[in-house]
Length: 344
Image 1: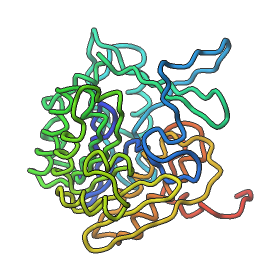
Image 2 (image 1 turned 90 degrees about the vertical axis):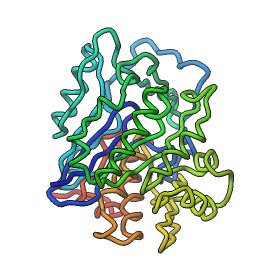
Image 3 (image 1 turned 135 degrees about the vertical axis):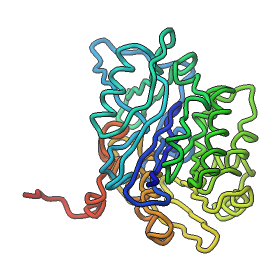
Image 4 (image 1 turned 60 degrees about the horizontal axis):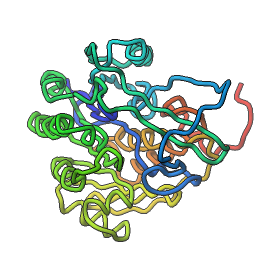
């Protein structure tokens, strides 16, 4: 029995299992979620400050998980998910593992003493601007290597989902992403890659070359317009998709933020507008977008249906505060756009 595997989190590998063979889901935070609020490209709706913003006295702080989706949400309806990473032997690592397990995710993340669990800080100083800062350097997960991704888990995978964040954490993490893609293809899994570029992770290194290598190993490629240009130069969505497909992936999805999304699977090409929503929080919408797209296998649904689900899932996620808390179930997706009311 095969299962979908998502290698998605900044420094983690998530695996989800289904009762049916062949490809399925994955999820990770992309830079251009299909909401009509915010900006295109990496950091849409967010601003990368020179240093993290000051904390106000009495500010409320919460711990939020990143990159994973509840197993019955749009990303894995009826499926099972596993998550592979390294966690610090600290309270934050304990909390992450506990919360993922509470969401039905099987956690494969050994604790590493002497290395902390990485942290993301999201700060909303005004109603329209959010700043996001990361503390990943030297974290336990930044030392993820190919040996940390068991062959036995890949052998049960339908889809392995990788992101450019994992690749950007350092040489070991890049080798892990490349090796995981190679081994996944070798055992018949479908590989998905979301560029998800973070400039700060690649200073002094060639991100484009690494991304092209991973794109060549992928079956499905996700990228924002600015991200796609890192791989193949600037162009229209159609031109970008064509050039990206020439690298190797059979399917390419260009995430265009407020303008929607463009997809090309070699047979069909589709430009879909975004769903208009009153966005509460756009962080995490990209995770939902990718999960929604991958939750339908090509043999199950045509390109148009998969892209519609992706756009709807991304828009739905914008309606709640938090990175994954607003990710919809498959049943909830059908309610997007309904007139407001009370369901009893």
